[in-house]
Structure formats: C-alpha cells, structure tokens
Amino acid sequence: MMTHESRSVSRRKFVAGVGAAGALALAGCQDTGGSGGLSGEVVITGSSTVFPVSNRMAEDFMAEHENVNVTTDSTGSGGGFENHFCPGNADINGASRPIKDSEVSNCSDNGVEPIEFQVASDALTVAVNNDHPVDCMTFDELSQIWREDRVTQWSDVRDDLPDEDIKLFGPANTSGTYDWFNENVVGESYDHTADHQATEDDNTIVQGIEDNKWAIGYFGYAYYNENSDRVKALEIEASEGDGCTEPSLPNAKDGSYPMARPLFIYANRESIQREEVHEFLSFYLENAETDVVEDIGYVPSSQDLRDQNLSKLEENYEG
Image 1 (cartoon, rainbow, N blue to C red):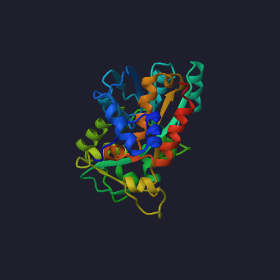
Image 2 (image 1 turned 60 degrees about the vertical axis):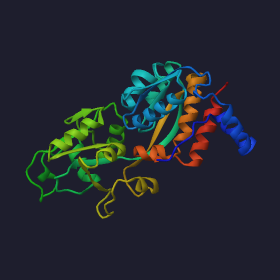
Image 3 (image 1 turned 120 degrees about the vertical axis):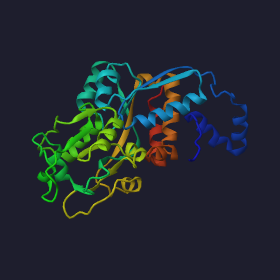
Image 4 (image 1 turned 30 degrees about the horizontal axis):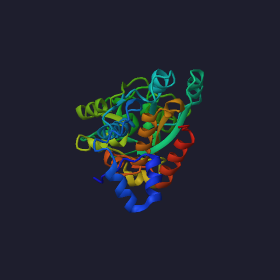
C-alpha cells in the first residue's frame, strides 16, 4: 500500500512555493502529535458504498489530529440527505449517485447549501452464489429479475436454467446504489421490485448470497473486493451482442464496464467555514487521489479532479 501524506490546501501551496528544503524545515517544525491545535467534530452520513472511503479518511485524519472527532454513519445516500444532511445535522453526506433536485430543495428549505465533490469511481457489482451456473447477464435479464412484475424462477430468465426460485438481496430504497440500479438497469419503464431482502448493510447482502445457491444481489465493488472468495461476480453485457465485461477497477476507469459510476461526497457550505471541517475535507480530497482508495476497492480520483475539488473547496471557504 502506498503511504499518503496529510496536507491542508494552505500547507500544500506553501510547500510548493518554498521547495524541498523549505518542506523539510516545515515538517520538522510541525507538532509531533499532529494535532496542531485543531479540535472539534465532523459528522458524516450517507452512502454505504462511499462509507469505507469516508471511514478510512476519518481514521487517518484522527490519527494525526487527536482532538478532532470524525463520526461516520452508513445511512444510505437518500437516507443521509433526508434525515441528517439536509436537516443540518451532518456536515458531509456520501452519495453513490448525484443529489436529486428534490434533495437540493429540501436542503435549501433548511438553509443548507450542498457542495459536490466527486471522490472516486465504482464498478457496481452483481453477484451470485459461487455454485451458480451463470457467469454473465445482460441488462435486460437483470431487469426481468429486479423489476416490480419480476420473473420468479431462474427458468423464466433462461430455458437452460432450473425451476428454482430466485432469491433477491439488495440495498434499501434509501440507497443511492438502489437509485442508480433502478434508473440504469431496471429501466425507466419499470419500477424496482420491493420483493427483496433490503438492507443498508452490504455485508448482509454478501451473506445472503453466500448462503443460498439461487440468490443474486448487487453492491459496490469494494464489498465484492473484500469477499471475492465468498460470492461470484457476474460479468455484464449491456445489450446482447456487446460482449461480457467483468467488474474491475481498470474496466471502471476506462469505461468499458457498463455499470461503472461516480461516487461523491457533499459538504454543507456553512460547515466548510469551520476549521476542522475545512481541514478534514482538504485531507479527504487530496488523499482520494492516492492508492488508499484503490486499496479499498474503488478507482481513485485523477490529479485533475483532485485539483478541481481543492479549488472548489477554497472557493467556498471564507476563512
């Protein structure tokens, strides 16, 4: 794993200006405890997909700033916006899809201005039991399984599959992953079925698939990456004849995997004015471009995206 360095935007600009010798001098003068007098609390809610990244960033930041408490809670993208972020009870909300107009309106009604930062990309993964005979599925087949008037047996999907009931495990309707899958895979003409075991805990989805030969579910690639020995990831064919593509970070990065998607965090502009939130966001956005994100199981942001994010952060910071 590549080690990463915690740097605020102001320190980053300063180091670039003073050069290597100045950087060494600055490092020698820093507080050895890493606290630098910074204190306070940062509250993060939202996407279970983004949660592993935010949680890792929180742990690493607190290791360097012992007087700052960063709490992370996996509530689902929509659940975080509705119940925590837009009411003003969270500083940052992770989201595995862009914020909705209705959520922006809800935030505005409460005096919350969400500032968007894309921090990574994901290869949303559909998984089945290791003993399941299927290795690749099309969007149309997945839609048949996951739509409201869905097929109920595997033989309804393909003639060569047995008359076994399809067991569904997936995210709750407060999840951004649910929203993305509903819009892009189930399709605009259909609604996502409610006939599935819904949860905000992706580990529960993995467990359900592992325990049932005829189960199927979907979640962020990081959870498959952690559990690749327990379940089988399906290759995906967007349309028949396109060819099957496996979920992987390289395939998500180059766009060849049809279920690649961006991941976001949204910060309350008012919260950004608090030093501990500003410094944490600076840390987060800088390190989102490192191997830390890839080790978790997502595509890191690019250098250009990192610099755009940091510029946007400074544009919204009045300190």
